[in-house]
Amino acid sequence: MSDYSNKLGRLRPAPENFLSPEQIQQVQSGRRDFLRRAIAGASAAMVATGAASAYADEASDKGSKLILDKPEWGTTLGRPVDEPPYGMPSKYESHLVRRISPGLSAVNQANVAFAPLQGMFGIITPSGLHFNRSHQGWYEIDPSEHRLMVMGEEGLVRNPKVYTVGDIMRMQPVSRIHFIECGANSAMEWGNVAVPTVQYTHGMVSCSEFTGVPLIKLLEDCGANLKGVRFILAEGADGSHETRTIPMSLVLSGEVLVAYGQNGEMLRPENGYPLRLVVPGVEGVSNIKYLRRIKLGTEPFAAKDEVLGYVDLMPDGKFRQYTSLMECKSVITSPSGGQVLMDKGLYNVTGIAWSGRGRIKRVDVSFDGGVNWHPARLEGPVQNKALTRFNIPWVWNGGSAFLQSRAVDETGYVQPTYEQLRKVRGTRSVYHNNAIQTWQVEATGDVRNVQLAHS
Ligand SMILES: Nc1nc2c(c(=O)[nH]1)N[C@H]1C(S)=C(S)[C@@H](COP(=O)(O)O)O[C@H]1N2
Ligand SMILES: [Mo]
Image 1 (tube, rainbow, N blue to C red):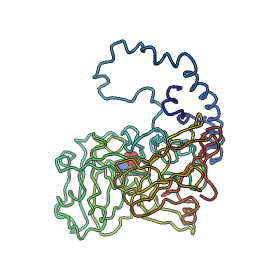
Image 2: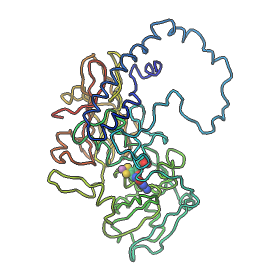
Image 3: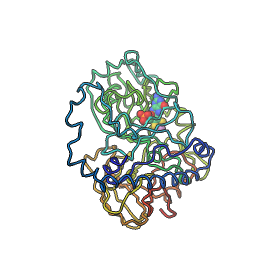
Image 4: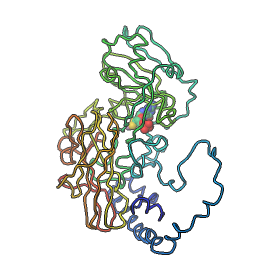
């Protein structure tokens, strides 16, 4: 662990298993405030042991020996180059994995595994760490037995077709980088602070290079009456029969993909192998995995996943429907909740920003809870409806600090504070929480998830 902390610039990774089974039970039975105390306790213990081990090597002979003496392993034969045939991360990185939030339902296969944003770099999510939200678990589908039907209401499709995966892979492909964010990302934070780490506050967003065929090409191939179609229905083959209405305007833009590729290889089974719909900028649930049917129509289809679920409870007691666009959002991923700053001095503050409306234009970072803002550096490439990485150097003086990031997209939309968002949306929603996140760095170096009264 000590080597690891040094590599991260003396910043310890979040504790792995920070809650006991009894504590998880208390969280699930509604005692959310409990989490904060549990985490504070866990982190305090880590500083004590962590601080000791992080400096011990450098202060003792061991530190200088590590550079003066050639390591023993460096004089031996390494492992065979074809083992393993499919490479895996170093065993020293085994803490960086998807996790199920202790605050959510205990039905593991029908839940969500959150991506460990705190330890990731750049904008691409390694496929093995892409979050996995599956209403009925994930499936291993034999691609030779998978079919996609394209059909429509009366008179809308001249030649309805059934495609094999091979048929689709013979068409002209495109490759594009896009984020997928579950509409329920940050859901638990509407009312108050509920979870300790960025993995659980924001880990339902991931970003991949997807390869596939624009859906519009399939519709043309079937002789669809494109002027007559106003909405399409997309349906998954799995047990949850995920079904969603998608406006035809998005399909006509050419952005909606029938994808089979993810980061240079076939989709992972957890993410919809062998075919999934990618609807850039729209909430995750519209990105139908195990895609089985596309139906063209003239009215919204009022499917269960847009009428009963995925609606927003407003302060006046009414529900908003069909609110699928993911608005501009950002979060600092490091330092973030559960991590510990080991000493004063220079840190790189890093995070991600994204918008369902297009490109990110700027990200500002505050170290004092939104009083003063500083422009962060956007790392290229800045892509349409993709994660954008930002960085900014910061010198921690050892006192309490409140870290925030605020993103602006190319349409001029500014990410709101909690105060601004709650004024319009209240506190009882589940979906579409894009408020500014605050991490408090305490004088001890512990980083905590907090919400400030006026930001
Ligand atoms: N067939 C099918 N498609 C699905 C789902 C599902 O359960 N079944 N979950 C949806 C939800 S709610 C989200 S957020 C995204 C998650 O995609 P991922 O698991 O690849 O991250 O897939 C969507 N597509
Ligand atoms: Mo979702």
